Length: 309
Ligand SMILES: N[C@@H](CCC(=O)N[C@@H](CS)C(=O)NCC(=O)O)C(=O)O
Image 1 (cartoon, protein in one colour):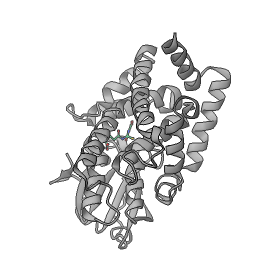
Image 2 (cartoon, protein in one colour; image 1 turned 30 degrees about the vertical axis):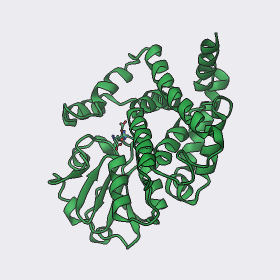
Image 3 (cartoon, helix red, strand yellow; image 1 turned 135 degrees about the vertical axis):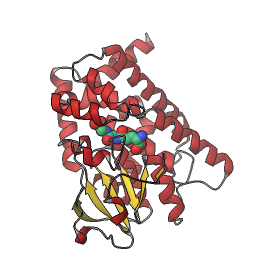
Image 4 (cartoon, helix red, strand yellow; image 1 turned 90 degrees about the vertical axis):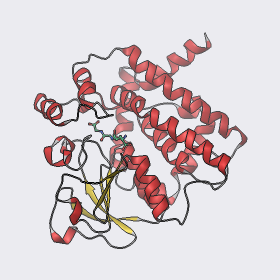
């Protein structure tokens, strides 16, 4: 569902240039912002996400207007947002009145529309490797949700009863995100530890594959060029690292690669510029949990011991 031909929201056709509906702490939006920055498209005006005011309808060339949809205030669980994104998730990109959904499809669209600094390799074998890595990353999206909610956000991510009801009324039954079904269980602590550990295991299998690829010291996943594979996987590391996962100990090559990618100007401006405070908060929370109750760090250690045993 990359491009939506007839969006319900009357705001969409009014928007000129680039407008991103996003949240600074949301991994799916972080990937898009990272890609936009790598293409030289910088964050411009901040506008209320649902504003129809004339002053916010047109973006400057080579920049995008930020329409921040707060996942904390649950802006995404409103009828107005469901008219923009029927699956009620961020991000959504509008370019000259046309609505694009799905973060990796958005990145492909941006890459094709602004061809400088390509994010896809021209060599067909490399392109196939990138496509496989991106697909794997996409499949792990749900695992990031389970692991980061359980060991990161905890009770903070639970919905109130009325929010749950609103979501159930508004979410399409065929939405691939299936948020209603997830929150129904999550809000009632109805997901067992084995399920969370299964998702952690899925992620660790992905990181183990990257660890192997990166063992020869290459700067990026396929070699010398930063691609969409680095974009999706670096954000997958960021979120789980913020939850306290010991990358340096468990996957040292992944850690080295992630550190280098995260120093790039595109990562710093696209991903971190407005996320630093929340990121620090996540990390302090994870640290306290690892000291007192046993967080992701301990879960990862127990798993490593079990695997060796
Ligand atoms: N497949 C979608 C997934 C988007 C998605 O799940 N977004 C998350 C943030 S990373 C979200 O908005 N979640 C809302 C929630 O969990 O309530 C994409 O890649 O764009």
